[in-house]
Length: 343
Image 1 (cartoon, one colour):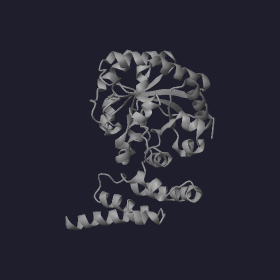
Image 2: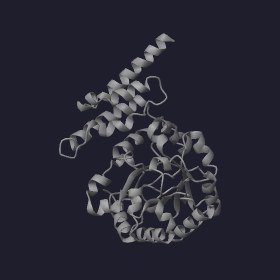
Image 3: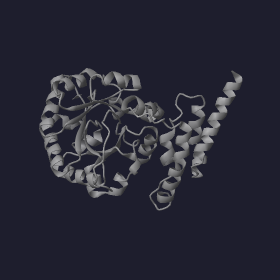
Image 4: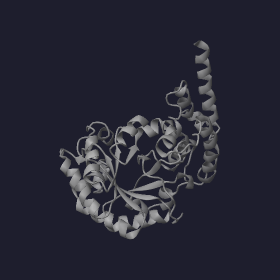
């Protein structure tokens, strides 16, 4: 835990908060690929923090900075208390989720349904800002259900900005609260990037980040001509090494990115240490808890399927030996050599 302010890179690039995916092991892995891209926790509800295991939800590795905590909730006082807890743990940003469309979240009266209550969101932001000096940001959609007018998201942002929020992460799709699953909500509502661009024009003093369906560094470059930052979601998870060029291209860092092989060698002692700390004390950490996030490391290379299959083999995983990563790499390299010999 730390309350010390640190120098932070701009939010030019970030990896989206993704439930069941962007846990601390995933974030540590991603940090081996990119030094400056912002990382976000999975959404943590206020109830989980105020009445649950705080360490389980908020524990992280110092290497993860810059790292943001995403909160789910709608009670200003509860969110303020949780923002203080997040600040005490040393998170660099507290983000309020106003974009999740799942029915479970709706029953808690937060997530995307909060977009229909901009005054309440403003109250939440003000309460958090009054409680801590950590940046308070909001992630939201461009509309809910059949509300398609740009004026809806413009008025939402304007109201919340008046409460002191300076950074908005815009998932450029509507959230359909009834009839679509969370997965369908990430794919079916059409992307309207121009809504996010217009927000930046209408609120030039605000920091506007765009999110939704962005897959390549070239696409990132195109969006940065219109907004301040880009948040990558599923592509960062399924094809994480695509982020290896981010530091040089978008942050001016000439440090050579680590090779995939070097990342594997760094992850092995990390996994070993995590298993020693949490694998045998009732907290249930297993080898797969970490390596599952690494399945996409070889995406696009010959033998990538062999790599994934080896790391997904339940019998091998049961051994609990992180050297399985080396085995997977060696088998993939064997496939590559075989293909080269046949060529």
